[in-house]
Length: 368
Image 1: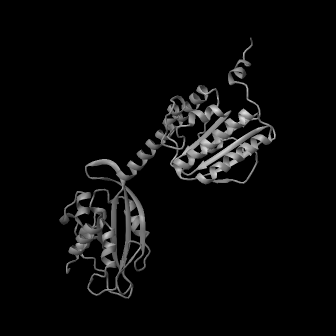
Image 2: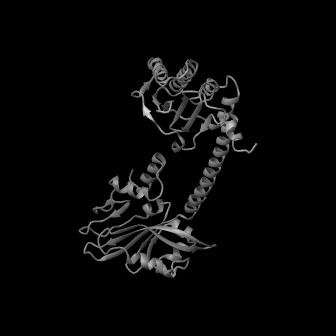
Image 3: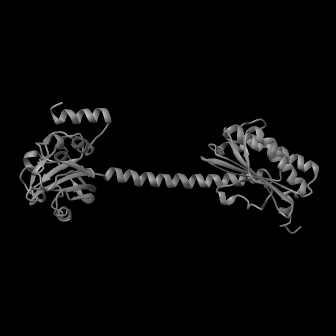
């Protein structure tokens, strides 16, 4: 492969590289550049001071997707690629051997002179991701241009000009801002839907089901009864018995102990079946409440499945609720759920004695 353009086209086709990355690839591949010592530094060319001036072949410039131009030390255009001419609506003859600031197309803006002044006067000195805003031909809106600039040097150390690579990032910035705005709107709508669903589920279950919108909505942990259980099929029986023992320790009625044990076993089984494993913890309070915490690292419970799982007998969600969710809810005093794409936390609470129905507390707020 003798010609540099053949090499660049091959790299572009096989590796999917575009734009300025091709320049980097060409140099790293050790292509012949008239015997001069050239290497790549931070995506720009670097020519050691003891070598000859850096010749940048036209083939390389034309392979760039971005606009590229080589300037003399005084800012006169030596070479400009097709992308440069197309972006700024200039013909090759109109730009050759003319000062950059006399080309029109916004280059008379003081920002371009200031940019070149910021490039240190040393071999291979570069300025990365500088920003210039200006209008483009045929468009009155101001565009944001990202510019990489490198100083080219003679072997003697005298300045030999500049290499500018210019990328119009206006559309990308606009899309990023718009995507951020749409994401913010989507997040706000999702949060509102979550609040509505939380309140509806709480009302439909007489405040037994608590859909947690964040981990802070989970109940506080009291005194732990035993060490955490690594949940798996062989350990499920032991976890159930630990829940029963803690309920017995606080003097809970036998029927309520049975309900709590069954709910804990069903919840733990769902975690193991749907996510492969989990962690189980049993806690109790001095005031006579037992909690079972079940953690898993599955993909989460689809929130849209909660109403059907609650109201439809035999419905099985795609997450960790399984078919027994309705039974679990009927067996405990309170059930807390917090779910995310990285896992789910379920907390079951059972008091020593059955709490009064919520509607009695609501009636207490009225003067009868």
